[in-house]
Amino acid sequence: MRRLGFVFYILFMFTVAIHSLQAQEKITLNDCIGKALEANYSIKMVRNQEKIADNNTNYAPFLPTVALNAEQNQRVNDSKTKVGGEVNKMNGVASDAYSAGVSLNWRLFDGLSMFTTYAKYQEMLAIGELNTQMSMENLIVNVSEAYYNVIVQHSKLDAAKHSLTLSSERYTEAHDKYVLGVLSGLELQQAKIDLNADSSKYMKQKELLKSAYISLNMIMNSDLQKAMYVQDTILLQAPLVYGELYDNTLAMNTTLLIARKDQKISALDVKLARSALFPTLDFNTGYNYSRTTTPAANTSLNRSNGFYWGVALRMNVFDRTENIRKIRNAKLEQENAEWSYRDIELQTLADLAQLYNTYENNLQIVNFENESAEVAFENLDAALEKYKLGTLSGIEFREFQRSYIDAVDRKLSAIYQAKVSELSLLLISGQMRAAQ
Image (cartoon, rainbow, N blue to C red; front, side):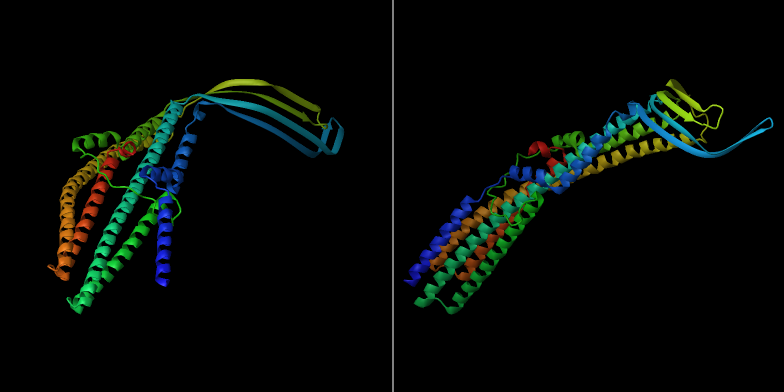
């Protein structure tokens, strides 16, 4: 009765675990990417940087400035005046002065500096948008790699569980034969050792699976303890063509797009330096009011108010060659921006060639390892039947078992590496967002 009750308890707990697992929400790769883009801290920071660039891009350089001013002064003086032979003394005489006004200053011409400044802010905003795009692309790759790693660890856990089941069957078979006296105790002990080894490997693989989930949850800024929500397979796209990747890289690679924007900004800096050679034309207008009371003076009250307007033309005739120095330096920075772009382009194309070479090799390895895993699985089934019939020793069966586990590990690693290579090629060619 105790054994029967224990069996029912185990069945009950197993049923609860199955229902709990089925109730666990399954999340796709796109769901993981969406959560990461929404909650990842790095993306939040880079988006704020883009907003700062957007705030800087405005029409302020074209607009006038308006200022209000108001002032009040009071003075207490002792005065002494002499008119002819008569002397007048006054002590502690207070005088008050009040003034207020509004002024408008509008720069009408500054050598096109205001237009160049606005264009520069637009290019900086474009760089901010590209930086956000690049961060999002890198995040998508990181999420995808972590997601596919979870799938690999799940598959390895299944393989380890299958191997553990076989070792358990082998140990049961060896134990039964030992009891019947047709198998030596040495063979039974070896079966027990292999069963313990596979049990340890199974537990270690469960640890690796949990670690893979923790890494994925960290990227998504999600509950670190959440697990068992991925149920998917790794599918490779149709083989990528190098020529198309090459053209897309030159046209859409985010790093190259940012380098091109840097070139434009360097050209605009040259224009800004040259604008100092031109005169500036300002229009100013306003309204002033002033009132001064001085009891000790002949004129005790002085008041004025009214509008004013005018234009001012200014031009630096000689500034110790500072403008020439700034123009020369700006031209050198523009030249450096050109060399920098060419260097980045060369490095990017070299990375593309290296990645594609690795990608092609990984695809071939996947084909080899898929075939090896299928053969190893068939051999293992045949070896198990022979072992049960007694025509295959335990040591020989263990070799088939190891070959199967090794083949599965190589197959999963090859598929994962091929997928990572595929993601890297899509990233460098600017197709990551479109691919997802």
